[in-house]
Length: 236
Ligand code: HEC
Image 1 (cartoon, rainbow, N blue to C red):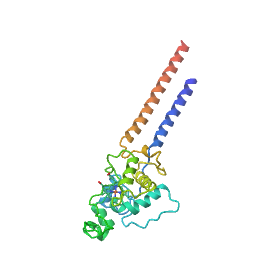
Image 2: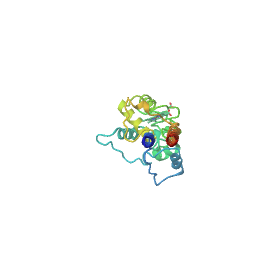
Image 3: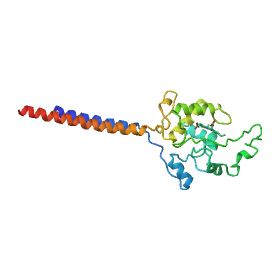
Image 4: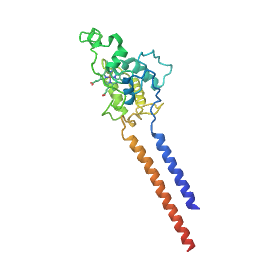
């Protein structure tokens, strides 16, 4: 009788353990594919990117009392999207065509060419992507990303972002990369806990689940065997 209870307890614990592991995995943001999926967009999608804003960049307002994500969203849209793109794809030809229209060759014009006016700047020719599996390779955690954003961006005037804004943009990017849970607020205390491109997450998840199941089966077999032996001892 006591052994039966033990089996039930062990099973319950096992199921709880599996549930707990499953809860800890972060689900990526819900993605609704746009109607105008071009081959370019399909390839972004396949690389794990999502369309942050439609190509025509509809006006975006900062809500009253914004969440950290909304603050990041607004600032990315205001400051970063021109160079890093509406899919976080970087300054691709496709994005220059869609986002810049007649200014798509901006660096040849007066505003951002080498002969720019004093308040202008030379536009960079190559801008790396920020979303997708090929972006931010070599980064270890959200902390590293936040430091890069705060100290080196925006490219034409590094160091102008407040701690709050660089943290909010980091949270925005991490969420859209599927690397933090929805609604999580990044702070100085937890920012180092969230890795970028965490390849091993999936194997670790399955190893934990597989390990738990094997362990439960083994323990159950042992208990049943012991129970049988006890019974036959009593009969003898
Ligand atoms: C004028 C164009 C421009 C703007 C605006 C801009 N960036 Fe960048 N960004 C660049 C360029 C160019 C690089 C590459 C710099 C280098 O390689 O030295 C870069 C690099 C980065 C990197 C490092 C990527 C890597 O792979 O190491 C991050 C992160 C980043 N930018 C984030 C941002 C964020 C967030 C904003 C908005 C606050 C922003 N950038 C605004 C042009 C820009």
